Image (tube, rainbow, N blue to C red; front, side):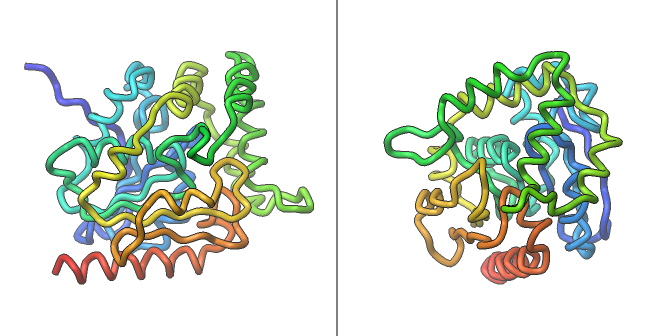
Length: 266
């Protein structure tokens, strides 16, 4: 019998609390979402690592196959969980929850993400030239250098000062993923399109953006038709990591959304 694919994860928070799954983005594993986990200690937090990262390094071979990673993610999400996915991780989450008749999750929160990262005439996003540069710059010998640049670009303010030096200190001791894992993530961002999955999701969705984000334009807020349980929010003073730059407001926005969702489901 074929073994069911599952991703590695770490548990924190209250084991008896409402499950909350946190899914990281490109380059950095789930440990970098610990600040979010600490905001919701009453939840049972699943810090989930995508293939090739952290607790899922042993499943690195599935990092080269987006759809295998999606299935492995779906298999680990507890029934009735809230799911929060950052940046590239949202592609996995949207496809996992959108392609099954039973989405399993109670809600989805995306952080600075897009259902399609490249732009086209009718869709704001990153230019093809930028993707080409990323794929060219990343080589087996440059993984650490490119990832360091990526992190700094997320954290620099308008005066080119790093806003969160603690995150950079954490990165200094971080075991950089393999070239195969990193290039697989860039290819996923280049070619995967989950706009239809997002459109067809039958659970409440909150999309969060940073007005100063260099990677994901906040103008994507129009991509979801808004109502009380399908909505978006833009953090005026944040870039790609609003949970670091505006943590109190981030917690309030997410808690208000969770309250609406669970009052609706009660």
